[in-house]
Image (cartoon, rainbow, N blue to C red):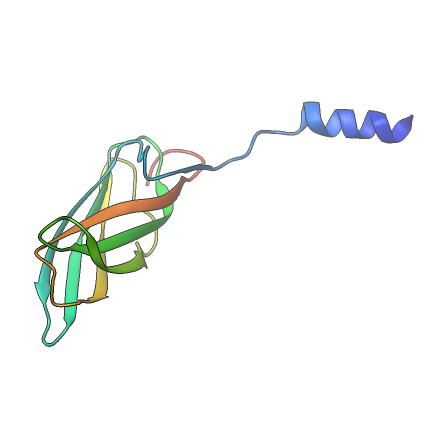
Length: 122
């Protein structure tokens, strides 16, 4: 009986998680701006910033950069991270290195995942 009572107490009394993880379909106030340029050979440098329009800082931000050919198919891909925290109502820079196929006509960068840190502020 005491095991059931303890389990019930843990489920009912336990505080909610302090972080929320969102998928790319719901970046919840985060936006990405970037530039891409060839860095010689097949290397492509993608740099920009993630802007956070929320009241909570974002952390563990994972980005995916993709090179697209003329028909919009993905021909190259790289994953990277924003170092540190994207402050609330602020932005943080990022830099990704992509090994290009040579067929890229344009690029896109999307937020793959992130967490909102508990508490507001910077």
